[in-house]
Amino acid sequence: MSETALRPAVARYCLGLGDDALVLAQRLCEWAAGAPAIEEDIALMNIALDLIGQARSFLSHAGELEGAGRTEDDLAFGRDERDFLNVQIVELANGDFGTTMARQLLFSAYQYQLYSALSSSADEQITAIAAKAVKEVAYHREHAASWVLRLGDGTEESHARMAAGLEVVWPFAGELFELFEPLEPLEPLDSDDSDGTRHSLGAGSVVNELFTTTCAPRQDSDTGRSAGRSDDSGPVGLLDARIIADPASLYRPWLGYVQSVLTEATLEVPSTTWSPGGGRRGLHTEGFGYLLAEMQHLHRSYPGATW
Amino acid sequence: MVTGTTPTTPTLPTTPTTPTLPTVPAVPTVPTVPAVPAVPTLEAVAAIAGSVPDPEIPSLTIADLGILRAVRVDKAGHVEVDLTPTYSGCPAVEAIESDVREALVAAGWRDAAVRRVLAPAWTTDWITAEGRQKLTDLGIAPPGEACVGANGGPRRSSPQPAASVSISPVTVAVACPQCGSCDTELVSRFSSTACKALRRCRSCAEPFEHFKPL
Image (cartoon, rainbow over all chains, first blue to last red; front, side, top):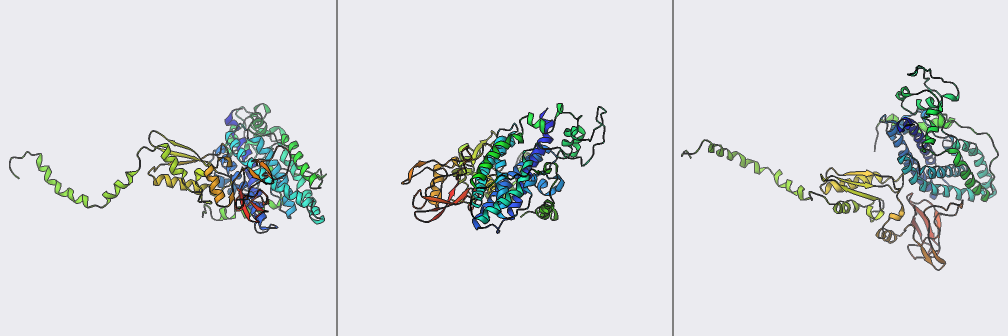
């Protein structure tokens, strides 16, 4: 698989990671002036700032790989809900401080493992972004862990609320460890292939084409090749090329860390088996549209506004 | 005037018109610009770029912070410098880049370019000894300093948590920049900027900021 053929998939991957960071930053910013103490207002804003920086790097890289001239701002403020590829856990409403800290623990522990692994990606820019970000995320993770410990092993009330928050966010952690999925066909590919093979839109066999339809600029779909894993320009191809980290490989170290924090905090790993998902395919929860409306309003109402 | 002059000399009398040109005041201002060295040396460029102050802690220069990563001058005299951000989201990045460019342009290198590089990732290890001293003078505990105090031997803080799942603070012992005591406690992991933590000295009771090791 040539580097060029993989570009749309790498762009899509970076878009997902950039969206994760951007959307979580937007949620954290809702805590400004509302956290339990002024130090926490500041801490959460600083964490959000780190995340925005990471988002900018990933979205810029995605835009460059896409090659359609879209900037980080175009991508952050110009896409609609279904074009966002973030995991759903980052878009969930903040809930109370315990719920926010539960999410911070699960997500920053995931980012820590992810960025550690990506620090040796075959894509130089991904390596550079990840190697920088992992050091920042180490502090985010420590911040979350200390709060989970303090609240979990605190009063009866704080323990109950920490446990309740964990129950809310836990099911959404499952999605973190799935390989990026192909998009559902938003624009069915009806065109015939050059070799006359008709694109099939059924089930999982068309992983590759579907993968190139959305993130990849639409015109790229005409470079589409027949479906088949032997010519994989999707997530499997990225794994083979050592560009991305296999999300499944992050699960055990992640769980080890999270479990140790929860145990020390006298909390239990939730036993729910329900695991929603679909964020990487552009499927989002109800609250996400409202988040985007707030985040994008200025840019869309006053295009090109600066200060 | 009419005597035996060649036909070519009559062109000279046209000079009376040229004396009007020197009356234009623009001429004297031009020589002030070329006062700049025509062929910049790496040292000169590094000195000018490196002396630009950090917008958030102005007594520190970008050289002190270790964010000036490279300086290049090609054969044509074109100047290019590499800067690296401290944190991914550092809001001062754009300001620093434009300040550096302005400083280079003011020095006469009008086409000077500033490049942003992410790799290798900035680390507080790159803050110079002078930079650390300036931080201390400002009441900000510098990063990664071993604290040698009555309550134990030197303890080296590490930029990243150990491989274990320990959730103890990333940094262990930080000396109070006011009284020098190692008996200080963490108040908040994030202070006025992402790169600093808020601590309190148990000996002299002063709160202070700590530039976190990264």
